[in-house]
Image 1 (cartoon, rainbow, N blue to C red):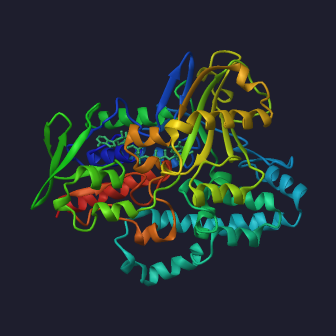
Image 2: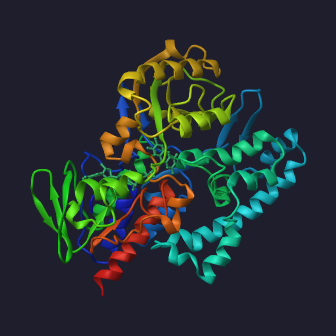
Image 3: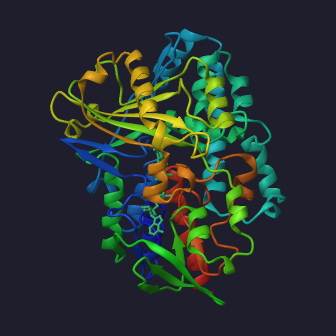
Amino acid sequence: MIGAGLGGLSAAIRLANAGCAVTIVEGGARPGGKLGTLERGGFRFDTGPTIFTLPHLLEDLFRESGECLADHLELVPCEPAFRFAFRDGVELRLGTDLRRNVAQIAALEPRDVAGFLAFLARSERIYDELMAYFFRRSFNGPRQMFTPRVARAGLTLDVIRSLDGRMRRYFRDPHLRHIMTFKSIYVGTPPTQVPAAYAAIPYLEFVYGVWFARGGRGLHAIAEELAALAVRRGVAIRYSAPVKEIAVGRDGARGVILADDEFIPADAVVSNADLVHTYRDLVHPRWRRRYTDARLARYEPSSSAFILYLGVDRVYPGLEHHNVFFPADYAGEMARIFGEKRPPADPTIYIGDFARTDPALAPPGSSALYVLAPVPHITPAFDWAREGDAYRDLLIARVRDLGLADLAERIVVEERWTPLDFAERHHNNLGSIFGLSGKWSQSTFFHPPNRSEEVRGLYFAGGSAQPGGGIPLVLLSGEITAELVLEDLLK
Ligand SMILES: Cc1cc2nc3c(=O)[nH]c(=O)nc-3n(C[C@H](O)[C@H](O)[C@H](O)COP(=O)(O)OP(=O)(O)OC[C@H]3O[C@@H](n4cnc5c(N)ncnc54)[C@H](O)[C@@H]3O)c2cc1C
C-alpha cells in the first residue's frame, strides 16, 4: 500500500481483516495525508479537511474490525452546521434543526419553504441511490453506462440537469440557491457544470449533520485512530518511506521500490497516492500504453485552496465553528478561478473557529482560526512563490471587513499553505485538493477505474480514485478497492 491517507488506511484495514499481510509505505512522517495537523505556540490546526460528514462510515470500519469508534474518538455535532453570510447583510445559520432552518428560509422567501422540503425529499432519493449503487463500485468505462440499472438510476439522479438548473426549480431566493450550489467549487467545477446529483452534499449536511472530534487533536484524530486500528489489525506502517517506483514485470505489479532503493515485494500494490502521480512518476513509461504522460496531462485536476492558519489572542463572539462569507460577485469569482485560472480578488471565504468546539486547541481566551479561499490548481497564470505574500495581505484585509476588524493586530501565530504545499507535501497533481475535477467527462464512467487497466495487480484508493474525493468517499474508496484486490487474489 502506497500512502497512509484515509483511503489507504480504509483499504489496508479491510484487507487485513480479510487475512492479508499488509504493509503501508508512507512518504510523510505521520498518517492522514491531507488530513494533517499543525502545532504552533500552543495552537493546533487541522491542515486540510474541516467539514466531516457521515461519521457512520467510520463507525462501520471500526465495527467490521470488532471495535467501537466511540471507545477511541469523541465526535460532537457542529450545530448550527454553518453560518452563511452574504455581502448584502443576509445571514443564515443552517444545520440539522429542520424547524430552525425552515423559519430562516420563510423569513427570506416564504414560497421557498416548500422548495426546501421538495429539495430534501428529492435529495434523499439521490443520496440513497448514490450510497446503494454508485458509491459502492468502481466503473470501468462508458460501456457500463448502458444497462437498465444505470438508466433507472439516471432518472433518480437527475443526470441530465445541472445542479444549478435543479436548484433554480426549488428556490426563488438567490441566497438559498447559492447556499445549495456553491460547494461544487470544491470539486473544481462550477454548479452549472456538475450534475444535479451533487445536491446530495448540502442534503447530507442538513440531515446527517457536520461533526468534529473533541480531545485536543482536531479531525486529525480520525487519521491517528485509523492508523492505530490498522496496526492493531496487524498492518505494518512505515513512515518517511517514499516510494520512487512500482516494480512491474510481464506478470504485473511485483512490489514497490523506496527512495533508498529498498525493494518491498507484494502480490498486489494499492496506491493511495494521487492517480496522476502514481502513473506518471511511479510506473515506468514502458508499462503504460493508455496512461501516457500526454494523456495524464490532459486530466483536469480539481481546484485548490489558499489557507491561513492563524493563532489569535482573542475570541470573536459572532463566529460559529464553520463560517462561509460569500463574495459580492460570485460569477466573477467563478470566471476568475475557472476561466483566468487566477485566485479571485473577492473570494468566498471559509473561516473555521475550532477552539469554539474544543477549547484544548488554543490557549485560554484565544482562537485557532483556519481561513480558506478556493483558488485554481497550479497554472502558469499565477506564481504562488512570488505573489503569495500579496494574496495573504488581500485575504487578511477581506477578513477584517467581515467583522474581525482587529485581526491583523491580534495574530500571534501564522502559517500559510498554498497550492504549492499540496503539490509538494503529498504529490497532489498541480496542488489539486479533491483529485480529478468533477466535470462530466471525468466522472463515474469516464473516471479511471480503481483496478488498473494497464498494470495487473495495481489498484487505486483515495480521492483521485472512484467514487471521488472528500472524507466519506475516500473511506468508501478503500472499501471498493479492498474488494477488488480480494476478488483477484482469491481467483
Ligand atoms: C485544504 C483541504 C480542504 C478539504 N476540505 C474537506 C472537507 O472539508 N471535507 C471533506 O470531506 N474533504 C475535504 N478535503 C478532501 C479530503 O481531505 C481528501 O479527499 C481526503 O483526505 C483524501 O484522502 P486520500 O485517501 O486520497 O489520501 P491523501 O490524503 O491524499 O493521502 C495520500 C497519502 O499518500 C502519500 N504519498 C503520496 N505519494 C507517495 C509516494 N510516492 N510514496 C509514499 N507515500 C506517498 C502522501 O504523503 C499521503 O499521506 C479537503 C482537502 C484539502 C487539502
